[in-house]
Length: 336
Image (cartoon, one colour):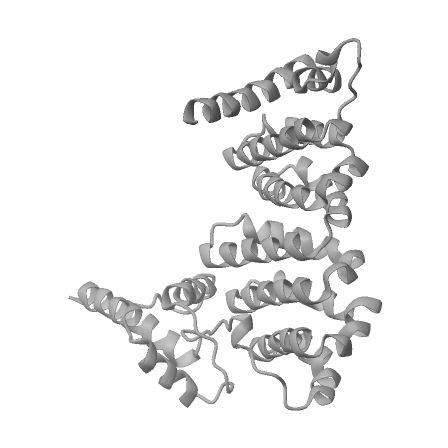
């Protein structure tokens, strides 16, 4: 009977209508813009937190459900960038920003992170010094990215995306620790954190110049964690086309082909698929713009894609690259 009641309590917790849950959260007086997330996310966190207790007796479903609601962690709102409002007093917010980010109260940290987002969107020049020149804000955002509490971690991820959007190449010197954390978060099993991190990585590849970003990404293509290699491969693949023809010439198409070829044999399908897409892009660039190809008038076939790959890659790598690009070409011919 107790097990049935426990199951019902948990089911009721997960099916509380959004409006009812929001009203209950606001009545707690935690903060003016409550954070809203799923009860399942926070129940997992609550159970994990209480699982290490050696003193407290086991809690049944009713007790867990009530405790989650009473502690206020069942309501976590993640505000999309377009729904953020401007700050009423920017100067005061800037003065208290670092203290809020360093707070031991997770609600205060989330509020401060959202203020970083608001300043990035509405007053980006005002934060340029502490963000870029001194790097204080970036370091504290990275600290929040490492936070085991999901609400803080995800809000920090969303903050990272807004920073990329607003400050572009200005943050390149402070990018490394943030990049590593986003790659780690996008590789974990907690879906709602993983998806947010992937969106932040997309923002990074959209807003940071590829000529600056690609050298930052390249070391992670050889990371010992295959998931991090896979996420990096995807970012690398998205970033290369933004170089344009001149950028690819400057970076070195042979170097890019070698990088893509190395990912074709990687452990995870995500890496291999990103490498395949990149190789097809590079093949199109190579064949469309002949000034990239070292053509020889007496031997016009020397400038072919096949010969170029064979001249720049090991026999096995060249074979793998040509197999991928030829299969794609044959598919286009058959489909036409």
